[in-house]
Each structure stands twice: as structure tokens, then as C-alpha cells.
Length: 462
Ligand SMILES: Cc1ncc(COP(=O)(O)O)c(C=O)c1O
Image (tube, rainbow, N blue to C red; front, side, top):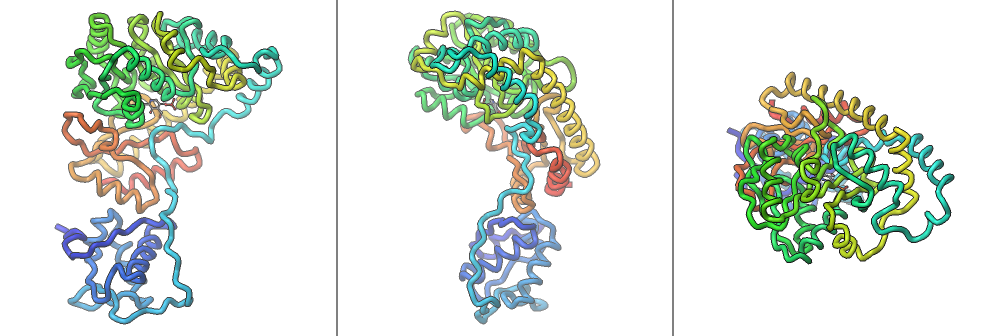
């Protein structure tokens, strides 16, 4: 087995600098020698060991070493390996090279955003024109803290038709994305005296942090091959779930478990918060209906335009159980928080059918990417298993044990931004560690998708 970098007693951190793997590595090593971080005479690891440690090709390391030998920074001798030169090397230009900043990744497969380059600008502009042309001048005044009635009405129609939500405009609150809605719900729960909120073993730390900021401890529920197990729900004030498409693992909450969650809420008076962040994007069958449809008195249905359109719009919505609106408005401070023109534009976008057309086109585009990803994996990385592929804009790639960190290091050197599964695991989750990457295939623009896929395949274990 290759000896790790640390075995050589060299305490050196090499930061990918962008501009290509070979050039980045050469620059980083040169900089380490020039600044004395690698002392004269220090023996460097073999190209094989360093390549394994950094997750790059062995030839890349050998080439970087050869370049630095040619420049005089390193020496290579048969039998004694590659060492830092004993003599001081004067940089050829006279001026010391400035350390390069870590490069911006060239390829972005971080889950979370849709393909922003495909935002339907022309249709949005058309809706915005029409909304502005037809809005009464009072629409420019301070507004209803629940949001514009035109948008709440359009959402009620869309959500009941497309997502099976039982919604009427009186119980819908427009908010600045799901995270804003969650912050408001956190404040309501705390004001009600709740101390804990049950969450899934896998999720987003920003959401756990928002609840923590409201004074609520998040307690992870067990997770197994059937997804999140609500069996351990007890006296928590609420449970936060992604029932249609678990984030990031990708499964659908099983029918029995959906029923069990609702039964718990009825029995204890706890609140179910349904984060329906990408419910529109299902590829294998009709979208899974909203959990809220089972019990609108106990489930808050939370949606967002962040995946279907763009997170920059900062538009989301809560469909609230009767009686909760007053408390949420109190938490909101009685103020409106989303621009009325954007709200009116989204209302027009929904009512005109442009939203449905956009979602259908986007679904097709993402489905093609997903199919290409799955086919490429089967060909190039058969040991990697893609899960959660039936829906959404991301997949989880299960890796052979022990290969997540090397793959992430290799990705950094390839200029590929991608996340490991471990960063989505709740710190108190009692789940076994799984090596996996969470790959957001919706993120790159169309023209960059195939090179991003190529970069991904290059860092996966074969
Ligand atoms: C699990 C999950 N929930 C919700 C959201 C949307 O959050 P927001 O509406 O605040 O942009 C995202 C977006 O990445 C998400 O991944």
C-alpha cells in the first residue's frame, strides 16, 4: 500500500490553486519550498504516495516533480528519491512569486441550486410587465403581512392541483424562502414552550442552526433502508421532514410512516413541518402527494421557488393549519417581508400557466442529465452506486468504504466543487458512517454539464 504523506514527517498543507491540476500542484510545491515550509534536504513522498494522498493521477505528481527539478527547486537521484534542493534558488524573475489564492472551482456539482442559466427570463419578464401594468397603485403600499392576496390565491390553486395540498388563501403566508418560514415557525414553537424539534438524521445544517437560534434543540430520528423512522417521536414540539424526497438521501417517506407521523401529531398536538423543496421534480411517476393532504390541521406545508425557479427570488410559502396564522404573524412582527412586485409577478407566472410549462421543460432537462450521469457511472465507475435517482436535482453516490475523503481531495484538485455525505449528517445521528458524495446535477449550466460530469467521473474510484 502507498505510504501516506504523513509517514515522511513532512508537515505540509498543499492547497489546490486552480489553473489545472498539474500547474496547481507545481505552484503549491514551489511555494512551499520558496517560503521554507519545506526545508532544504527534505525528502518528498514518492509520486505514487503523494498521488494517492491527494487523489490525483500519479503522472501528474511525477510531472510536477520533474518541472521543479528542472527549475532547480528539487533534486531527484536514483535511490534517494526526490528532495528539496540544498542550495537557495533565486526565482528567475527576481521578484518573489506571490502565493496564489485557492482557485474558484471550475465545475460546480454542489446540490442546492437549479440551473440558473436556464431561468425563464423572457417569460418572467412578460409576467412582470403584465403584473406591473395591471397592479392597482395600492399594491405599492405597505401590504398584508401574509403576502399579496393575488399570490396566495394563485398558490392555493396550484398547490391543490399539482401537490395535493389542501389550501385556501387565508391560510397561506408568503415568506422569503423556506428558511425564513422555518425561522418563523421556530419562534412560534419556542413561544409555545417547545424545547426540542425532531429532525431527520440527514439534512441541512442551516436549518438545524435556525432552530437552534430560536432556542430549540434538534433531535435526529433514526434512519434505515425505509428512510426516516418516526417511531421515536415522543414529546418533541414538532418534527421537520422532507417526505416527498428526503434531503439528501432521496427516498420517499413510506406510506405507513407518513400515517405514523400524522398519528403522532394528532395524539400529542405536535406540529409536522413538511419541507416540500423540490416536489415538482419526480421522474419515475406522478409526484408524491403532499403529506399535508392527510391532515391539514397538524401539518405545515412549506414550499419554495428556490428549486423550481431560482433561490435569488427569495420567495417561499407556508400553508398553515387553522389557528396558527396569528402566532406566525406575531413572530413575523406584523410586517410584510417580500416585495409586492415580485409576488405579483409570481402570481401572474402561475396563473398564466408559465410556471407549469417551465417546470415541465426543466423536468425533462434534469431527467436527461440524470440519465447521462447514471449511464456514465455504469460505464466508468461500476463500484459506485447511485441512489435517490427517482426525483430532485441531486443524487447520492455510494462509494466503497474509505474512499469519500480521497474522492473529495481529488475533486478539489480537479477544480470540482462537490460535497461528501458526512456534511449532511446530523452530529447526534446514530447512523453508521456511509462513504458517499452528494452530487447536484441541476447546478451547472447546460454548456458546462458534460465537462462537470467528466470531472466527476475522474475523481470516482474505478
Ligand atoms: C432541503 C431543502 N429545503 C429547502 C430548501 C430551500 O430553501 P430556501 O427556500 O430558503 O432557499 C433547500 C434548498 O437548497 C433544500 O435543499
